[in-house]
Length: 68
Image 1 (cartoon, helix red, strand yellow):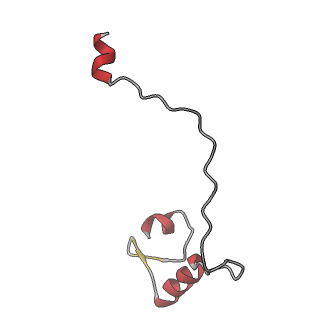
Image 2 (spheres, rainbow, N blue to C red):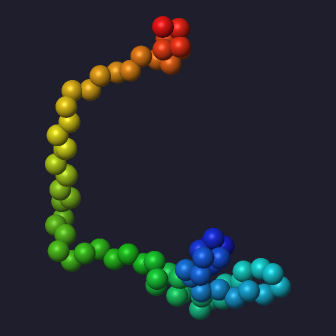
């Protein structure tokens, strides 16, 4: 949380050289970052289509690359 406060992304109080968070600060932070499910989503998640990939070829290990 200190990093987020330092970047001024969340509310805080700077007291005695330390970041302090009141109950109101924490409630606002929770509201800021709350993620709610979308109403349009179906009950079963859909799998994303697999991207087209050509044939893959393994590389030689590094120890054999230096010798060769």
